Figure 1 (cartoon, rainbow, N blue to C red):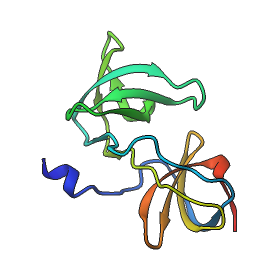
Figure 2: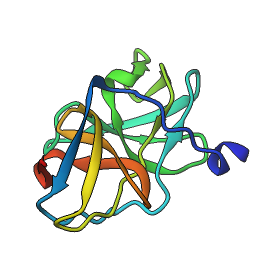
Figure 3: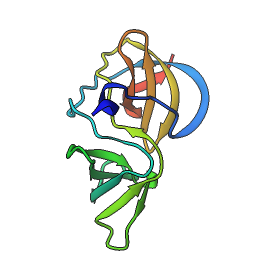
Figure 4: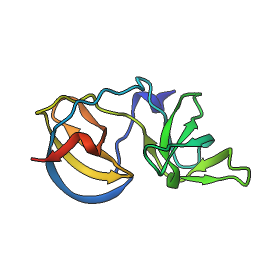
Length: 131
């Protein structure tokens, strides 16, 4: 499907002015094939994350399983399915201490950031500090 080849990285959280951040703790993604959805996509919805409240396990239309912000999904009455309200990519960045990133926004303890050579993705807030 072409959506996977042309993933867009649009602002989907609480915007804040762009700030430079420095990585203070390594982060390695456990999801080499991140979930991705567009507004209107139907999703299967699983359990909520206990470590990061506000996130829920979903299965996207390609059958990939991962985490997404609960408030990006309009839940069906049964709570086990829903419809995406906006575009979302669960792409995480692998980062090392000392790397500098451009902070775009934060959502439920995760930050969407950009790296000069690695592109854009999510990094847990506890791995970052102001530069």
